[in-house]
Image (cartoon, rainbow, N blue to C red; front, side, top):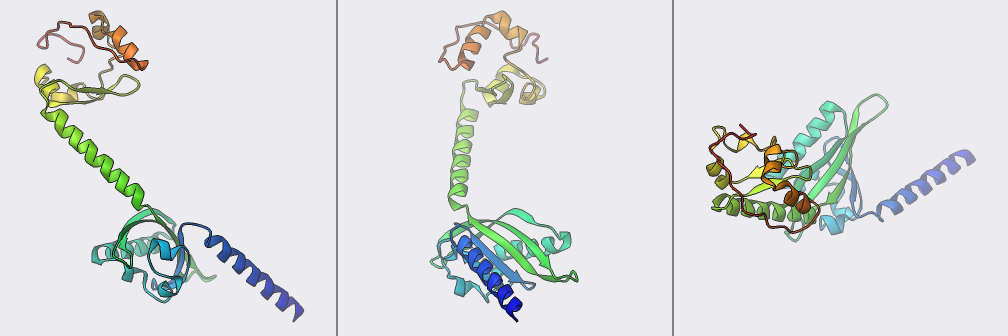
Length: 231
């Protein structure tokens, strides 16, 4: 009897320690049964979801998602079962209790009894709404910049840190008139290794630019219809 009491006390202390730790993290730590019904929720569900632990436990996970997002959640459960694997970085959107949209990044895994029978799922939800908003804003800025450069009459060329050409605009295409278009040079032409660029005397200026200096290229002549390294 004494041994049983000690085991019970050890388990209770372990559970209290685990609950104490989960309440310190900014994520939602959860567990469901095999039907996707919450049996455990801890961490910061009120902050992330707008619902208390008591409101989550006993409710179906998919009930907190709209119709489209519910399909994603169901597919996730099915995939986790079929692959018997942990699924990471699953992104879904929910609406908090007050209607505010929240983007969740979820890691989850199925768990089984000693006979291999599915018992449920365990997972962690993280609020990544701020990151997603930043990513969307960056994409919008990038798209606007692309539209401006594409419509510009001036030639635009972008090179990576190693001198490889990674982007050009329509004016560049119109100037050189390669049969394959911009694909002729993008991803293959290296401005730092070009003998043609070196012969024009521009390489010195380009190297200075790569060193962080603001430079203005001097005028130079070239024949876009003639032989070039790209051809």
